[in-house]
Image (cartoon, rainbow, N blue to C red; front, top):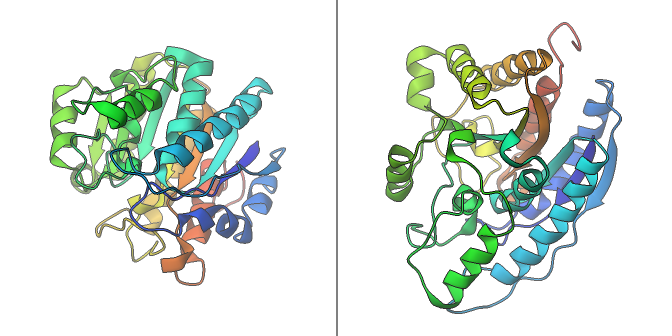
Length: 311
């Protein structure tokens, strides 16, 4: 497994998640993963350019595209060496790079599981804020935009990072509870593979929803799964250190149960984990690094840690 830090937060709601990789390291991410028997290498942080001031363009496009290309190179190297990239950020825009690299490597054999309070399915013409961290899956799916000029050309460049756009049928969301109008219309219109909101989890239970996710993954015939974990999927009482907190998220036990049950399905080897993102940890609004510690616990459960020890 390769740890790849991406201290980039120019495309998020609030600065501070650039400190996320350092916070996770201080929360002993390496010791947790090594303790589960993995060959773990910390490959340091991707170099991030300084932010820019720009008009008539997508917010912070220039430093973003440079960062994404550098990240793609690191993820590609990891995949070529048959290792699991563990990409830690940083705001969720960095997943345009990590998932694009995986799509270029695996093609339509890759499914994406988005664990997030937000759908991140906006485009420049539907985003209320203009922040690209809310457009990540929109770019991965090469969603068209009506915006023309420089911003339109920049959007195309983001979409073109992946030679194989993400197939909507291979995309799944779990934990949604804050979805913009434009995103909601897309989710209803497109033949997306799997959508589970907090309402679904409340009504039917987390295990039922993860089982439903498993059945969807089997139906895709994909052999690889990229899991993208945004800490704002958790209730802010549990994980206050994020710039996009929304009340009513997953509880502590639901977080672990999600990771534990998903690990059990991965252990069946009907599909394998291609890579993992852990994003949107913001130590500037955290309490004693609590959010990074919780995220490390999620990673531990995902890779086999249980109450009675590693599986």
